[in-house]
Length: 312
Ligand code: ADP
Ligand code: MG
Image (cartoon, rainbow, N blue to C red; front, side, top):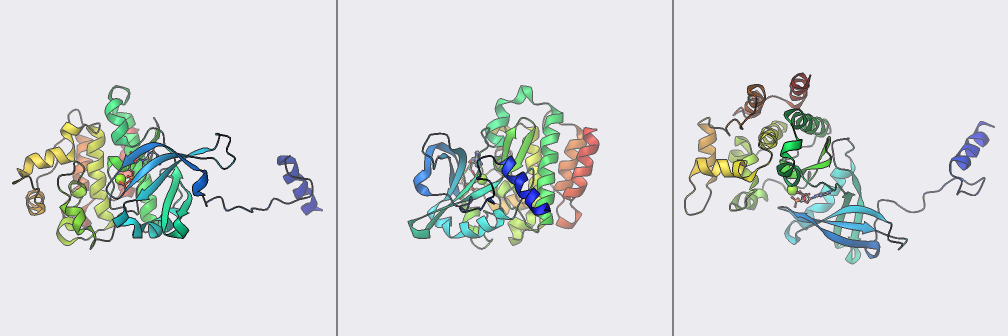
């Protein structure tokens, strides 16, 4: 009798279902078909791939959902399946949601489908919102990034590419971490380091152990978070970006940035400066993320506590 009552409940909540029939999931909602995916515009391009806004419109009535679709550059494509498996496992308020995959050419190429965040990355968003964004809001963003990162760490993942360009804005009070799991194994990342001219060369977000030994620890993500916090406090302005400031410190020769020089500068204890109007308490948090040896760095859990104290 209880079962019958439950089924009646289901039918009542879903008036479209014929009475007496249990809903059966016949279609895998994470499988997207190419023919229903219509490109609307480009959203962005990064080191590994490009992201497009598409409408998924299987009914063909122009009312399908908007999704962000990521495809990888040919040389990185082999990685995408493993990365999709990673993203599938993650579920957190401050992590971009996985929606599914779309495979083409009989599975030879694959695209990652995720939720669409109209405001784009913090880098796209913050420079234009300087006047609407006070310190409290910036620290709230920082707190949310730490919460997402703490969760990621609890699932035994290391992001390896935490930066404002990879944090997406849901609305003025919520941000989400994206573009994780896309980093390649460190051996392949050799070429990654030599991409020097790029304005967003991730080397400036890397801790010394990553630059010297190509080793990534959870604490290496903390270092990158420190750089991301610096970006927040400078409103992601290009003129004071980590890349701009480090390049000034390094005096690159022949237009080439030298990783060895960067390591020297970091080992000598030099760090990004305190951004204008940044309170000492916030800058000292950055500095605790930038301790030379990973074991001396603050952890995400403590960053959460400290940021909550500052926000009180
Ligand atoms: P890459 O691995 O190539 O760096 P990202 O995942 O970082 O690719 O995406 C590149 C850019 O595309 C981001 O910096 C952001 O501007 C935009 N973007 C990525 N994902 C989304 C999304 N879900 N919604 C809106 N914009 C996005
Ligand atoms: Mg990116």
